[in-house]
Amino acid sequence: MEQIGVVTNLTDQMAHLKIERQTACGEHCKGCPVGCEIKEHNIVVPNSIGAKVGDRVELQSESKLILKYIFIIYGVPFVFLLVGIFLGNFILKSMGYVSHEIMSVGIGAIMLFLGLLTVRSIDKRFPDRSKQIIKMVRIINEIN
Image (tube, rainbow, N blue to C red):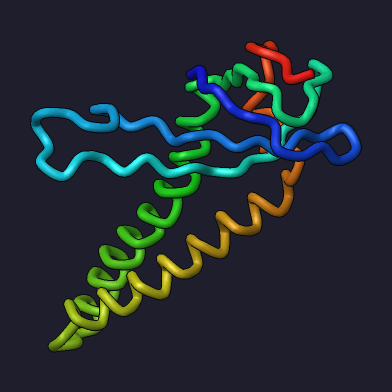
């Protein structure tokens, strides 16, 4: 996946970039009466190509790596939720609880929270991984 960013600030070996989030249909497509709002995001990446403030740079990221992170962020809590609901339902039903469905949803919510804590702990264990996702490839135009 490739994007264009503008260097807004430099600190140490890192570049602060402003990028526009890409949409599937573009800014004003005919199929959408209101148009799509394009939001700007600020990211920090290693300044591996010696870019200066104001330079437009090409950014590249591996789709496979991004999909892996998306699965971790969304998939792990979802799996925890489902396990909590089905396991809670099975255990509470076998114990003879009458309202086991409602209680199993509560157990699922608790498991969802535990899943979110798990994702947070995984993220804290690998703080430098985010720097490897997006890389600057080349300077498109330099500002002197």
